[in-house]
Length: 79
Image 1 (cartoon, rainbow, N blue to C red):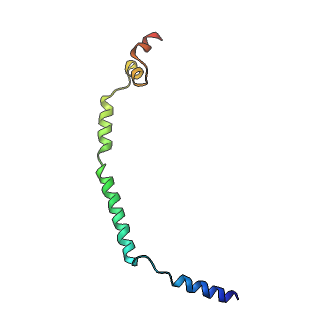
Image 2 (cartoon, rainbow, N blue to C red):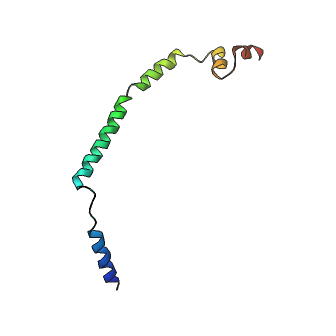
Image 3 (spheres, rainbow, N blue to C red):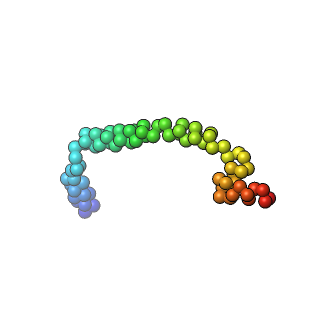
């Protein structure tokens, strides 16, 4: 009886077709990777832009630190 069940399940598994040809899966995957590559390439210079901007905003002085963290410049003189 188990060999009959295995034969039935094997016939059902063999009858299922792919939704598209096998080569089309490769083409779709290649297209997705090309899209992701173009998205990555579009943002390739952002790290340099932000690093250059951070150098101009020096947060090392106490007045700037107080103002940058939500306090006012007058808060530093009261301590």
